Image 1 (cartoon, rainbow, N blue to C red):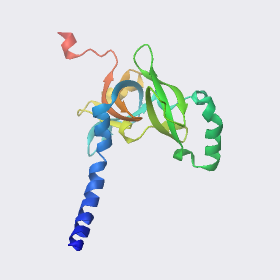
Image 2 (cartoon, rainbow, N blue to C red):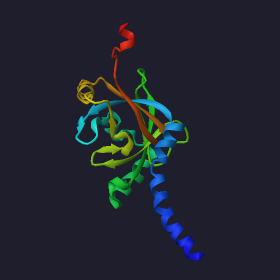
Image 3 (cartoon, helix red, strand yellow):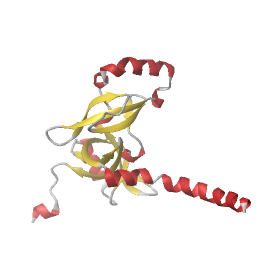
Image 4 (cartoon, rainbow, N blue to C red):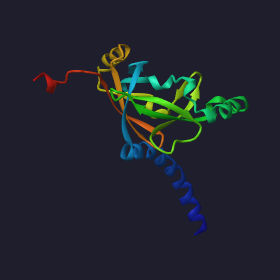
Length: 182
């Protein structure tokens, strides 16, 4: 009987690991708050998956002056003793007049209230994780979206929950939809 439980555990452990990975984005989509972010393009095509837009966000390039005053010295010390990407940062977001969310503060601890994203410093940019990097779109629409992003007319909508974000859509600002034409 003891041997049976060992085999059962050996089978369930890899299955559990595989099932836990999609739980984070699922929880964010269920409980998260929807925000809009401005984007910058990278690349529109994957030979195996079709069209997609690899996104870079304006909030990735944040001014160091946004670092919370109390955290500046601690952050500087951590960078000297640790590898920079290992330092977890919390970027507080606030919406502007157009409803586009911008970084308003960076700290080493999560804020008690408001919308924030977890980030790590990657070279000179903030990295917000896998779920904000690319978004798959309908076939033959990737180039159109990339051109719109190049002109500064593309926004991304994401859901944010407990510092994690998942992209839900991308759209061209002020685009005329088929419904508006009729």
